[in-house]
Image (tube, rainbow, N blue to C red):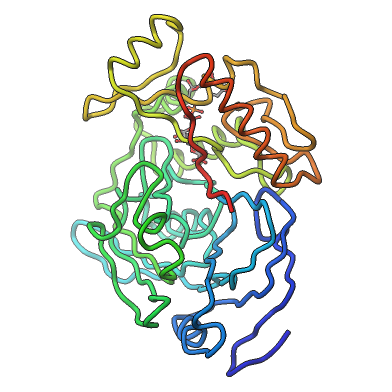
Length: 344
Ligand code: EPU
């Protein structure tokens, strides 16, 4: 490790422990970012300042296929606090390096509910706006107030609001125009008061019917979501994965009718704008992929949308498997599946 103007520069760092798929790759240079000032030190450095950067959060939404020549900035900004208690909302701020699920649990324990449907999503707070995480009827954008980000050219901290973030389905400006141009250091959440549960999702309705609880509190919703996710999604601490590997494709009603004509069983959801979201997991499952593998990269047995590392997988095996799945889904349904994690 080198020390440079108070900045710790690490060389030749294995990224295996820093990506939830546990794929092997080495960062030539890695700098840990604990504050906005740390980003400014990198920007002002005569060598690092002009070099290409890669911003690494919890590493739970990336597929590493090679070593990283860029300067890896590992975001480790900490802290969770209530910044404002409005009549209509609690505003909570969290450091980008905080673990996402810990934030959900912390807010609930402090009496600021609203994030419970997003429990157990792997990754960090800073990554949550990047892909506008979502689950069980709630997306990050529904609970978003603003964020602070440090520009990687000017070193200036800016506060960005939802309009600038351009949130879409698993998408935002940080995956596009601002990708690796800015480091998100803090995110503020708006948790509406009075709290209203979001229950309109089949898995949750099932829990309500089973338990007879029709007006659950936030803790009950949290517990249900944790149980639902644990039942069908692998824990990355036990078996490497990056959550859903493909996005659920969105098609026109005509395309959907065409597919239903051939496959009446296909799981699909109409969206408010008239388009239709198809369940990619169902399509992959229908093509018989559950449990299939390329080397040590495999399709999870309980949820075909998730690819897993059976131990020792490398990025190219994951991508070979993903390519074969895309080809077979295209062959049967005429739909091109798009990977959800970032492939590097
Ligand atoms: N299905 C199958 N076979 C499978 C997988 C799914 O038939 O192998 C069917 C299910 O029975 C269900 C439908 O497909 O009828 C959809 O499955 P599920 O409800 O599990 O949700 P999903 O579409 O697979 C999405 C998100 C998840 C999120 C859940 C719950 C995407 C890409 N994925 O999954 O997000 O947790 O909804 O809201 O939008 C993630 O992004 O990493 C993630 C896990």
